[in-house]
Image (cartoon, rainbow, N blue to C red; front, side):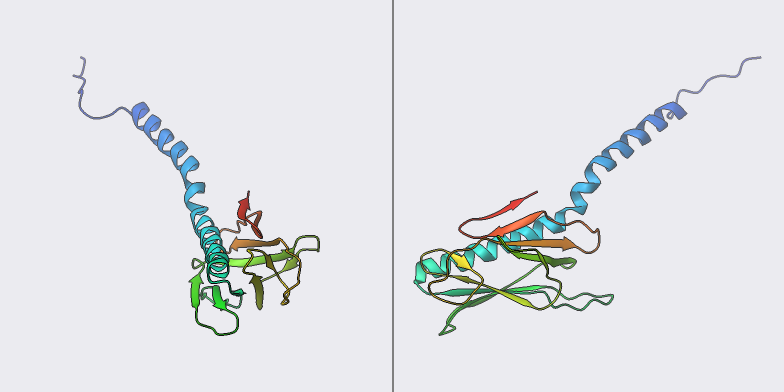
Length: 171
């Protein structure tokens, strides 16, 4: 005696194929989402550099970009801060925050060695003629400053973000 075959629902093979496709798509898309906070941090850093440089050039005043890496390392980390301030009269001050789990990781003045930058502050000076350097002084030559940031949740880092006559990221 044959039992009647029902045609409603999905077969086991069809369900397995759908699950495999979902798994492949998840594997392709998940790294993009994990890297999103790091890209946001790089964008914040680039935006603050552009703001500092634009302020220095348009107002014809020196401007300081202060990178503050001090943060609370417990279960609820605070944000790293970027502060742009007009040197001298302090008529302009703007603060940026890196995303929650994004931290400054390394700091390098081009030509010198890479230094860890997980605490303390670093200052980048922008001149009215559009150049940047890490030493306070009018006749200081332009320098490229390379900053690496890290996502402490995933362990991913940027290869480098360059502050100089241009602001760019290399991956």
